[in-house]
View 1 (cartoon, rainbow, N blue to C red):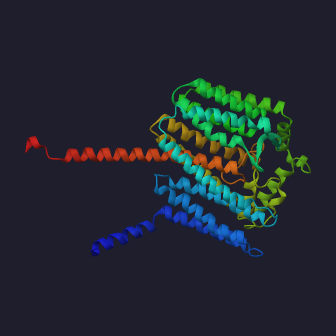
View 2 (view 1 turned 30 degrees about the vertical axis):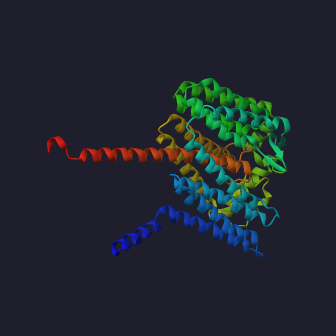
View 3 (view 1 turned 135 degrees about the vertical axis):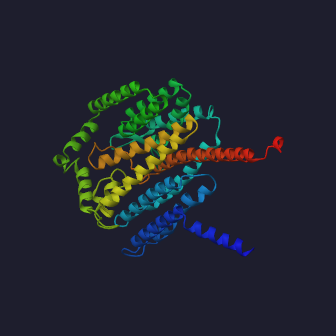
Amino acid sequence: MSKRQAYEAYRKERQDKRRPDRRMCSAMMLFFFSGFLLISLKNEIAWQGLALSIVVPALIYVATMWLPRFFPADKLLLSIANFLCALGVLILYSTDLDGGTSRGIQQAMYYGVGILVMLFCIMLVRYIRRWSFFIYVIMFGAALLLALPLAIGTEQNGATNWINIGGTSLQPSEIVKLALLLVLSYFMSRNRLLPWLLFALFSLGVLMLQKDLGTALIYYFTALFMYYAATGNLLMTGFGLVGAAGASVAGYMMFAHVKKRVAIWRNPWMYYETSGYQIVQMLMAIASGGLFGVGLGLGSPRVIPVYFTDCIFAVICEQFGIIFGVLVLVMYVIMILRGTSIATSARHSFHGLLALGATSMLGIQTFVIIGGVLKLIPLTGVTMPFVSYGGTSMVSCMGLIGLLQGVDSLNRDDLSYDYEISRSLQETADLPDADNR
């Protein structure tokens, strides 16, 4: 190797080390390594925490830097999703030490499974070109899975939307989110109204029978946004919004637990010792954290009922502070903006609708749960995407990121193809004309 070649290799290596994605990934890995290390040394040495201080940064590196070597990817979107997943593991583990639970360890395992599901969804979008057969299999399989809790489901927080398999609780409506987006995107892109409308109505009807109104709200508005994007029909979209208002009133009149939640939302202090205790404790936790928080692993998060699912944003604000909580919200906003950009850059209507649906679903779910925690709207039983405890929630959210990344990788392939074509045409135009020589 000559001196010039050695210098070029050295300069390239230096440039690679200064790449923003590498620095961002390194900063995230250092943040979570330090966090788990501090928690592990809080009282006695916790070997599980020490293991997590290695495993979680390794998962971040694999999902953010290693996987994109095999396909084009939006590394900012990957970085945000992985940061939020790791944040959920850190918060859950910090609350495990004083309570003798193991949700942090389980969430780290769910995080690993979520990365595999994300990879599967990326491959699904990238390599399946003919959906005509698969889409019907997905549709009927999703319908059966969604209806399963009506036969063997268990009730939690007023909704019968869980099933127990081998000692593990699953929420089928979380997994069916991915199928819903594929079905709606496929038929809407082909202007076939009846199949997707029947599937959407069936899904909403089943969710109403299960009294899972939070998930029904996410399904409905996601379908409505996708319909408007596919058709541009403002009149029918307006009728859809009116129908949503009517359904909300009907749900309020039909279900006692919905009336209770609205009453608690209006004045939680009146029911402080009973049903309003959760909201009051959430607000007190956010207030006690102040701007900079009480510190990782400190505070009293366990006094909040179901702090690990519905109320985990209040725990984040208590331990890290309101400023950090606002930054978490900014991450969700950036994720939505990136998803919207991916959708508008798609060359095919199916891919564009799929990316828009995934983005809308993440945005709606984030607003519903964080709006409930901040008492902007009545609290519903949905999870905070990527952060809340739960295997099916983690799988569905990482699957949504996989669908987005799959569409983005196709967009980047199309841009690379356009560049190669334009360069070939330019080289052809620059060739000397044989007739004029």
